[in-house]
Image 1 (cartoon, rainbow over the protein chains, first blue to last red):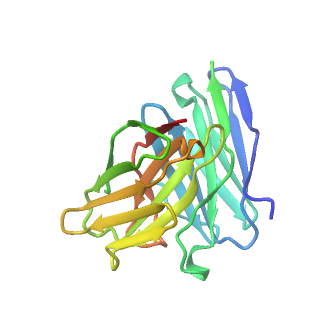
Image 2: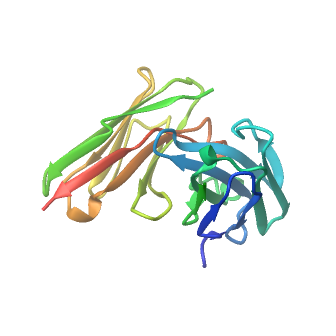
Length: 116
Length: 112
């Protein structure tokens, strides 16, 4: 299995630009999570989906952030407009969850975002 | 909402010694407590988890203990090896189906 695939791995952009991060979960997994990691705040849950439906987006910082999961094999996290304080590593994770009674999250390798 | 605290933030041990990381959580509804290991440049990876109906769980050199009354849980690594050097995160969730809230992490260094 290829694991969770995230793109891009690194992105450097200027303040005000739109950023789109992409995630392909492991085939067959029905839960998908977006986390943000910074030194100051650690691993913060932004949003999670079950069966492509957003369940909890209370961690999304503000209206500049949006996430979609149009189908079981693809999700995006969009920041528009981006700000320097959005600089972080963004992780996508998927889980088989309900089908297997396991809580394990399988993380991608992350997208490192730098906003200048 | 759930809040998970973790101590220490950094830990340095000699190879072969034991390492202990302690966590507390705030939400008494939490019943699932996983531990993740993150190596440099990679995403976190599950190493062990424990559910509230169990007080202790062991897997080779790793053990976790849970005290639901005190809302404490701990990770114990025995006979540490250099490859154990990483950042370790404790976490909590109501069930294994729900959102997982992570602690701030412990950077473990094992000195050869």
